[in-house]
Length: 468
Image 1 (cartoon, rainbow, N blue to C red):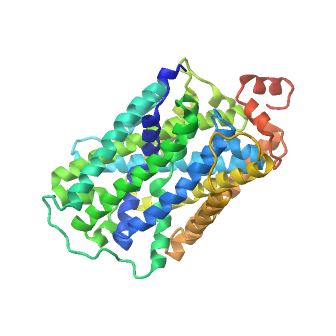
Image 2 (cartoon, rainbow, N blue to C red):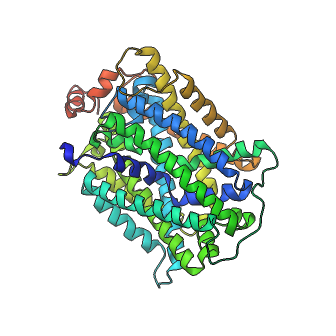
Image 3 (tube, one colour):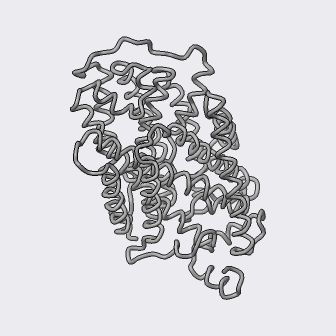
């Protein structure tokens, strides 16, 4: 790809923002604020800083192994071996992302049906959106970036304006008088951090497209950090708006708090505007998810960790099967969860645990490579030695252990996660032994992982009968 066609810092920020600001984030934002009040902002700042340690670790890994399409999969393969790699990537990334995007899409269709009264099934909105995004992603990274830049600009702009109108009490609705805090002790703020964590997940989706970024060693880490800080600021403004126009209890109980806020703020016009924001959010999320997961699947297929067809590309160099597969499965999950938005909070927390585990692995990978290869040149290095990776691991593990303040819900979340990982463990063991024919837990040298990017690596191993 020529340098003038590569993505700039603005596109990196928009991709980072793209997956992070989603409809489910608006739900989590409303529920978190409704639970502890405006002081939820402090929980958001803690979660944002923890996620910044993660993107810093991923940036260092990308500096050691640049231009890898599988991202975290290839880093973990080089550090911990194929077994934890396959489990964490299929469970922590593919399954979690497809499930959450499907639920996102179903909430989008629910919001559209509530606002636009047309005699059509609500799922039709999701189908149209899915087809348009799939076709756009099949056109290549340039088309993907154009959509992402426009959507991210409109999305962030709308949220800032709606938030400022509420914060400055300029809405047409009635101003609510309520306390700034609902938290009776500091421990509630720390518990709310697990809810806030979901608000900042996904900035690392820039990593798989880093080879298409200008001056990637600077723009990739900087773009992710800017994206997270921007999101924290925008959502903080929204929380002040919630305080002035939406009763905390109603906000916490609402399946669509963003629509409730919009209607309380500006009446029917506000509801329509927030429906537009939700539409932009789900387009942005699905666009980033389809592009990112297709690239990750392509990288894993090159390592023979997924069926080879995921590595095939079209004339635009796009892994077409991955784009189609991810789009179709997102729609299937949207169809299954259609009109069942009441379980969104539970699914968000389940998805959070999967994602948190993969983030812990990213920090572990950094510490392992620091030990094994201390003198390898790094264009980016996490400052402070092992401090930030260790803080990231400790903070993320704390959130996993305190994923919900309700003991029953917390145990159910853990149960779902454990059952999923047991099933994935059986599948992963079978695939590695029969298809990859590799030691299950032995790490793969970095040079070999990097060589897997070349088509000849798979071809030669297949001819020798090593890989099937």
